[in-house]
Length: 299
Image 1 (cartoon, one colour):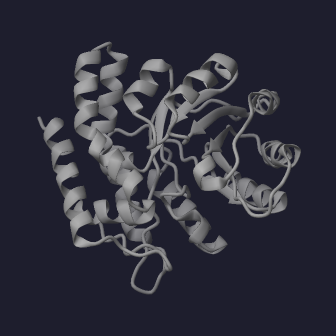
Image 2 (spheres, one colour):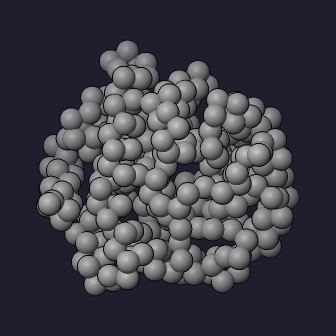
C-alpha cells in the first residue's frame, strides 16, 4: 500500500540543467542529486519554479523526473511538481510521475484566464483523485495570482492524499494562521520567501526551496538545531544564511540558482530563454553569501 506520508525535513528544489543546445544535461543533474543526498537532504523536488518548470517541454519535464528518480535510486523520496493550465494536463502529469515512481507530487495551478474558486478547487481535487500518492498544495499568489481560502483548504483536506501545503506567500503570519485553522489536517512546508527557522519553530515540518539546493548542509543543520532546542544557535545560523534567501527574492529564481550552482562547480547552463543570466555584481553578491554560509557550517 502506498504511504500517504512524506518524511519531514529539507527538500531542495532542483535546477533543470541545460547544455549549449538547450537540452537537459542529465549527467549534471544526476551528479547534483547524488551530492545533495550525500549532504543529508530528506527529499528532492524537481520541476518547481526554481527548476523553470513553465519553460520546459513535456519531454524535458519527463527527462528531469526520470533522471532524478534514477539518480536518487530510492535513497530519498522524489516529489516532482505538477504545473498546468488545464485539469486534463495536470492529471496526465500527476499520473505519469506516479507511474515513474514519484513518492508524491507538488501541485500548482498555472494562472491564465481567471477562474472561480470552485474551478480552482476542482483542479486540485481532480488531480489528487487521479493518484494514490501524497499531494503537496502549492500557494504563491505573487507568482500564480491566486491563493486558498481557509474554507477552500478545509475542503481540499477532505481528500485523503492531500496532506501538505507549501506556502510561498512570504507572510509568516499566514503560516501561523494556517497552523491554527488547518494545521490538524495539513502539514506545512516553508518556501524560500519565509525565514525557515521561524517556520520550524512555529511547527512547519520542512523546507522545500531553491536555496536548499546550494546550501544543503547548512539547511539541514538549521533544522537540526531547532529540533534539538538550541534556539540561540539556530537563530544565529539563520542570520548568517539569510543573504541567500535575500538573493532568491531579489533576483529571478532560475538565474539566481544557476549562478549559485555554477559557483559550486556545476555546469548547469544559462536560464532558459527569454530569461537572462545575472550580471557580475549579482554574481559577486551570491558568491559572498555562499562563502558566509559555508563558513558557518565548516567543521
